[in-house]
Length: 192
Image (cartoon, rainbow, N blue to C red):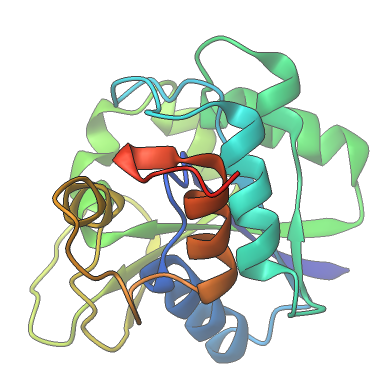
């Protein structure tokens, strides 16, 4: 049975925190692959700042050099609000010989009681909560908790830095920054 990590998000834009989290879980749990699943419209967040097409282009640039990182566009194809429960059901039907590990940050572990159909979802998928070593976390749900290097990077912070013309070097991959500049995303001047 293949062991597949799932990392969902808006990736608006993708940053090194996403990549480090995926890499750590891949290595520590001996996964076969990590699938990045960009959402059309997450139920717990406001809409993405840039189009799904631009977010997909940035994500492709971010993970393209790693052969065990894949992108699945299942939620972009579905449109509307994306619930993890529906995504996992679809993935399990399409890939019956895979065991899925749903990767979430510590902040989302604490939010699990509010997730759509969480009691059924924890029966279907193994959650993996990624946290900093100094972060205490308790949850009533069966979550594998992994300590990872503390990278306090968020897409919101990256967008704010871009909008105020501050450097994002080392916070996002260079290929992602090239797309942002080329397309004039997040207040950057388009280079075309």
